[in-house]
Length: 127
Image (cartoon, rainbow, N blue to C red; front, side, top):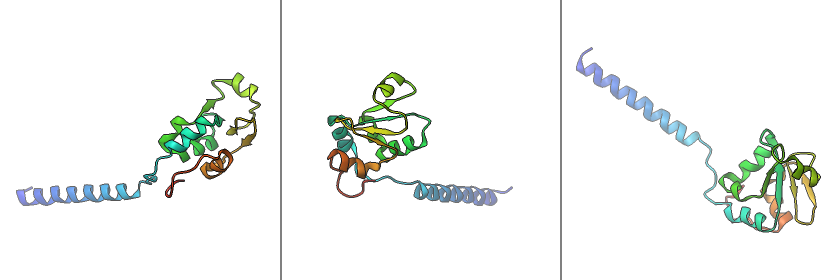
């Protein structure tokens, strides 16, 4: 293979690699730039707790709604803490419990959690 063909081959590989990167970059779902940290911290301040299990797809959806802000949400992993879940009367996942003991079973979504808790969501771009 002569130098000219090598340059064409290298150029072609670089072009394909660039196209693959661009396609990947624009196909990856982007979350909002709006952080839900304050909303999640408000839930924590108000003692709104989610009970769930790692293997539960509905629990995973709820966690995904918060993105990285979920770390602030009070959460009990029931298979690891069964006594806490039993004492709270949790028999289905996810279960959200408000400080007054009111329970909401199943996926609630952040909009409904905002309404139930009184915690405001950040303006625009939130889930």
